[in-house]
Length: 354
Ligand code: COI
Image (cartoon, rainbow, N blue to C red):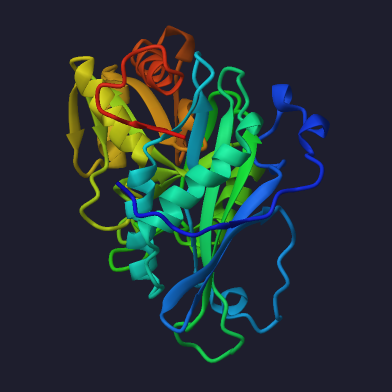
C-alpha cells in the first residue's frame, strides 16, 4: 500500500485529444493534456502538482544543462480488452530510477510521488491511451538538477516530472545492425547500467555513422577488447542459438537492467527454452552463424518491445536472416502482448491497475 500524498491538480480548460491522431500516432511526438511536476529543495520533495502540459521556465545556468545530471525512465500503459487501463511493471522502473539517481548523485524519489503520482496523472489522461495493436501510452518520468550554479558538484535542488505520450511502434520493420568497434557505449565503472541522459547523447555519433553505411543501429561491444556484445541501440539483445536463448549478463555494470529483458527471459523459460545470462562474444555469434545454429536475433526494450534483427554485420562478415521463418520471437512477443493487453491471466502481477 502506497502512502497517500497531497497532489495539487489543475486541469486543462480544453483537451487537445480531439486534435491528436491516436489511431496512427508516431513514437513520442504528441503529449497528453497534463504533466506531473515536483521539486526537491532543502532536502525534501515538495510542490507535487499535476497541471496542464506546458514549457518549463529555466535559468540558462541550470546545472543539468551543463553537466548532465539527468536521468529518466520509460514505462507503458495499456488499455486492456475490457476497457480498463493498466501500467506494465512500474515498480521495476521505480526501483531502477532510484538506482540511476544514486549513481548520478541525485536524491531518490519516494514511491508515493513516482507510482501514485503516475497513477493519478494517467487516471486524468486515460482517454489518451490508444487502443490499437502495438500502441500504448508511453510514460516518461525524468529528473534533472536545477541549481543555478555552474560549479561542478551535485545540485542541492532537482525537478522531477512525468509526461505522457500516446505512441505507436518505435521500430516499424526488422532492423539491420552494424557491430560497433570504434565507439563505446559503456565501460566498467561507468554509468552504463543507469538510465542517464548522457548515455543516449553519447550514442548518437556511432548511430549516425552506422546509418551512413546503411544500417539502422549499432550493436555495442565492450570498451576494452570490442569483443563482447552489450546492447543494440537502446535495447537489450538476445540470440537464439540451438535450443538456448542467450543474453549478456549484467555483471559488469555496463548494461541496462531492462524490464522488458526480464519479462522476456521469464516468458522464454515458460516456453521451455534454456536461457543463459552470460558474456557473449561476437566470435561465438559468428561461429554459431557459420554452424547454422544461430536462429534468431532480437532486441528488447520498453519503447521497442521486441524488435527483430534481419541483418548483423561484423567487419566484412554479414549475417542475414529470414525473419518470416522465425518461431521464438513471434511466440514470446505474443505471450507478452497477451498479458499486457489483458487476454490471459496476469499470473505474476505485472499489470498495475490505474
Ligand atoms: C525505452 O525503451 O523506454 C527507452 O528509454 C529507449 C528510448 C526511447 C530512449
